[in-house]
Amino acid sequence: MARLFIFAVGGTGARVLRSLTMLLAAGLRLPDCEQVVPVLVDPDTQNGDVTRTVDLLKRYARIHQALHQDGQHPRGPGFFGQSLSTLAQLNEGGGVQLADSFVYDFGGINQSFRDYIRYGDASVETRGLLDLLFTPDSLDANLDLGFRGSPNVGSVVLNSLVQAPEMTYLAQTLNANDRVFFISSIFGGTGAAGFPLLVKNLRNPDGPLPQHNVRGQVKAGALVMLPYFKLQQPTPQERAEGRDFIDSNTFITKTKTALSYYANHLDGLEALYYLGDQAGQPLPNNPGRSEQRNQAHLLELLGALAIPHFLEQPAAQLDRRNPAYHEFGLGSAAASSTLFDFSQLPPELRQSVARPMIRFHYFARYFQQHLLAKKDTPLFRVGQLGRHLPANAGPLADLTSFFGEYDQWLRELGVNERKFGALLADETDFNHMVKDKPIKTGFLNSGLTDQVLRTELDKAVSGTKSLENPDAARALRWLVEAFDVATEKVVADKLQYS
Image 1 (cartoon, rainbow, N blue to C red):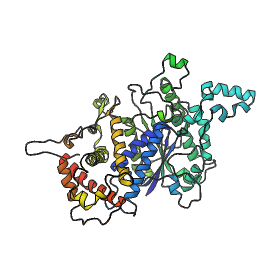
Image 2: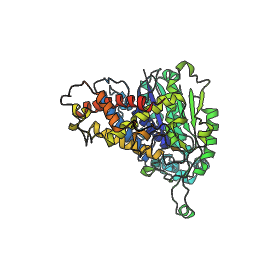
Image 3: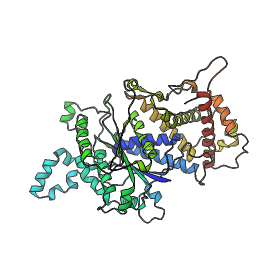
Image 4: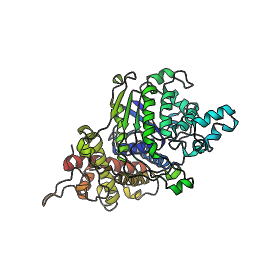
């Protein structure tokens, strides 16, 4: 089994990774992947998109660790089944000093680009050249906000990545059967600049990174997000006041330029995935820091599906001399609709994506709305869940918080013009939670109710003796395994989803 190293570059990379984490929590299988190692790359350490995703990754990792702490999980992958690790956690020998974080450490860049390149120390001739290459706004921009739609600035700063201990250790630990995947936008600053530089450093046989032969053998793919949103533009008064903003009117021009560059100079990938859409209503224009916290978007969820698709491709069919190019297309009827549901997925994705998402949704809703109300059930009583629920700390508190994050993510997906409406966030009736497959009910058939799900949960734990003084991790496993069995049963029998 191989490992997958994911470089999520910039705010868009972080948001796609957020959706991927939700899919992994639901039980999405990543083919032939033993371990996922996400690395978020963004110099704006306070970026709201990044910090939110990092918190989610940490919470997921703690839940997974609690479920698998003795090296076993009887139900197999299931909910939270995929292992997530930081680079530091791979470094078991401790030979390299690495921060135990999912975020690449830029060392706290807190200076203007002008100071970073030592503009004041340059000769008159060099300053003249720099003035031709960079606008005054770019030179004066503070780098702790990222590159704010300026890939020419980002390409200079991000060249330092190759010198970092994280990159050196990653190159040292790579095996030929591992895979690398990059996620970035093509129309911004950090992603557009960082992605091609990371690819170049991965493949460069003459660079300072070790194991150039192994780096040359590793299969690599990338998701490139084309423009899919636009930003509110400042009023003339705000412009006169010098308000900081990103000009989304330049997104298409930047995309054309980047695509031209990729066509002529980007030659280190075996597979490249493109995804974009017509922009809807403008989003708030927040160039960086905590205010840059965009709502989840359907295209980020669809973009996350590029990763399992890439892993499904046999290594023998991935040829860098003839790379594969992929797009995700909707049928003509679906493309003209503003509402996306599972009926618009091809059959294979309805099985591998829709089913686990539906099961996870049932899990979350029952846990939030019904579990504590029925403490006399075998699930609650035999598992001694009363010792740990409700929880203020530990893995069950992490599960509770994760479901809260899931609710927020699901609601955000439903507010854009291209809405994800497959799972209804505010529906309390299990019969109507799945948009494209409501469960038929009648006088003698109540369909799927909380009582039906409760019965399946009790069956899932039948014959089990009372747990003896279970710790929080054992209680979590008891709960997750029961929901894994019960939700699989009701989706097959009551929803009859195919």
